[in-house]
Length: 228
Image 1 (cartoon, rainbow, N blue to C red):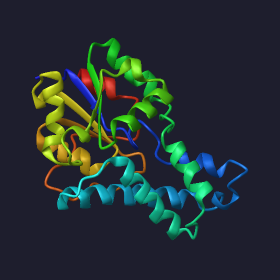
Image 2: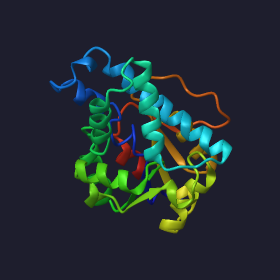
Image 3: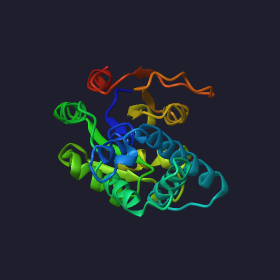
């Protein structure tokens, strides 16, 4: 069946998760980040994702904002910055207004002009997603923001992917799902979506039972893939 619906992971896919630490490091109040922001950002993201998996497996769900804070606190301690409350507060504030990658607005606009349904499907809580979408100015080219909070478990649980068919009344084969997380794209492929892994860092393919059908280094050609 032809693609009718294009769905995107949010963090790392549409929005640059390193932007908060990078911006804070450029501000005069936080010179302690200038040489370490990239490592802190990478650790923050890694722990954030790991904590979603652990909570999903153990049934200890919480919202993504708490997981985000937990990941940051671990990363600040690892960097020797635990107890720096001003830095912590600034980094968390910036996370609500992450920058979109440069190609995102034009790509989403192209999809909407071509008649596709568009949505975010994210671990993020509704408020966090709304903050990023508003900050990036892409709300008018997204039909919905689908959050795991409606099912109470993080990706890659199949109930999360179920949200797309329920919202848009479409078969899984009509969905193009795009994620910067290799494991997310792989799991969605196993679910039945056509998937794109946006592999911006040039990482190896995850060793899982499924693989994404497409691998890109940015989102520019998503409309071409959707059109077939």
